[in-house]
Amino acid sequence: MTASPAFAAVDWGTSSFRLWLISQDGMVLAEHRSGDGMTTAREKGFAATLDAHLSALGAPAELPAVACGMVGARQGWIEANYLDVPASLEEIVSKAVSPRGTDRRVFILPGLAQRLPERADVIRGEETQLMGAAASRQNATAGLYCMPGTHSKWVRMENGKVAGFSTFMTGELFALIARRSILAHSIGEAEADPEASAFAEAVLATYHEPQRLTGSLFSIRGSQLLFGDTLERAAARLSGMLIGAELAGSGCKSCGAPVRLIASGRLASLYRSAFAALSIDIEEIDADQAVRDGLVQAARFLGLVGGKERNS
Amino acid sequence: MTASPAFAAVDWGTSSFRLWLISQDGMVLAEHRSGDGMTTAREKGFAATLDAHLSALGAPAELPAVACGMVGARQGWIEANYLDVPASLEEIVSKAVSPRGTDRRVFILPGLAQRLPERADVIRGEETQLMGAAASRQNATAGLYCMPGTHSKWVRMENGKVAGFSTFMTGELFALIARRSILAHSIGEAEADPEASAFAEAVLATYHEPQRLTGSLFSIRGSQLLFGDTLERAAARLSGMLIGAELAGSGCKSCGAPVRLIASGRLASLYRSAFAALSIDIEEIDADQAVRDGLVQAARFLGLVGGKERNS
Figure 1 (cartoon, helix red, strand yellow):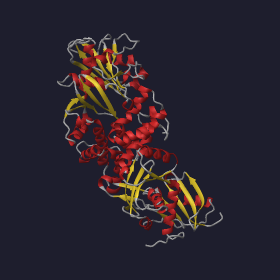
Figure 2 (cartoon, rainbow over the protein chains, first blue to last red):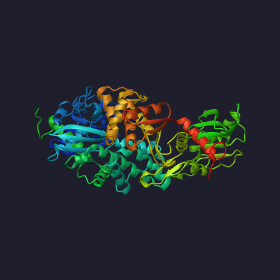
Figure 3 (cartoon, helix red, strand yellow):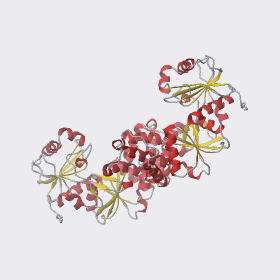
Figure 4 (spheres, chains in turn orange, cyan):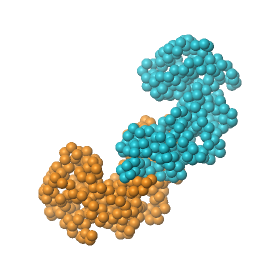
């Protein structure tokens, strides 16, 4: 390494572990990815897992770390209790918790909770991604953010705070229905092609008639039996139906400004294509960069790197 | 048996086998149930399975049988090709197929197909149930029928014919989401209580805002984490959301007449409660009796029992 790291940024999820060494001026000096998520770390020990990955990168034993994600869940390293919305990044950082049993200074960021009876919801990890995205752009302290995934998160920012959010189980529903329901005969292991016309058609149909969702799914099997639909067409239709339903439920058409899509790779392509089918303007933000930026912002508030000072 | 049977009525599904011996005047002389559905019968042989169950009831070797359900699917005893809608019971019966390799006269009824590109759908077994329900009541040759289940079928009858139908994967989605998704932590093995207020509230909310379905599911987990919701309340909410979405998609509120609910047991209770929450009038029909009545009707058309003569 040409410069010394000032801290380690860690995105620590259920099944993934991503680490960046960050310099005093916020530059990335090294990056490392592994499958040592919660499941593995619970066996090996969280401190030992973090130490091993950091020393493999040649990082000093005293380098502080800032982590977000499921590492702060009840079943993680140490529970960082949910903070209620509305909440700012500064408030989130002020509630960071530090585990015992390690000489390293480790800060684990809490997730957010929305305590509304019929819309009770929680988020853990995406709040950091979101804050990174918001901090790195102009006019980004208000608006609607879409973070697609196994559990897609739609977050509304107002006045630089997370005002509210909702979770759509889109990715998990796709996996369950495509691989484990009767539709598994029609879809097999196929994945949706974002460019397929069947995908865009299904997005449109379900967006405009969301009440037909659970009654449309079986037409995937019907089309295979009666019209010989391919596995690929079936996968595109299922994905389009579920994403169309998500977009219908998100209220994104009436938000009055481009939706900020925080995504990478395949998911970015699918959602880009879905928004285009509905003529909804978007601004794209890379998901990997956003979480790193969010962790750097958090480190600034914690005084671990230079730049904007912690002012609370 | 006090009277001799005129034929055997068989409802033969994927995992169930139900048999009734019916007299010349349409009375039930004996009933028998077993788990010898498709899976088991494929191993033991279909003819052997039917023979064994019939002789256990003391039925003669030459007794004819009329069967409906998955026994007529491609992976069943012999394929009875789908008949396109619109179709009458008489047309369905005229397309019955008889398997070879047995001395017994066996008639297997075909299912129905709806060849519409975005609403491609198939039905197999429920068409017989439906015909039984329609044949045994006044003014039943038109209207909307609801047959809840793993795959709920909604069927529109016009002029004594099946005009169209749609399948909602409600029961299968409940099982997948309750037992195999992240919500399994919140629901466990709990079943929905049809009398729970959480059930009726979820039916109403999802019926009126069906676009929120995939975004509401996760609030079940949120409510458990933030408000300590019980497994029972979680199960009631999930069931209510899925049934509310089904009712929203069915168009049942605008059908202008009572919906005919063909169901038994728990499912009948859940749907009765859901319709009541929405103030939708229903007429209830017992599912078991309906399928038997449909098979007796079919036997009449085939000339196996007395009553209305086959006139085509």
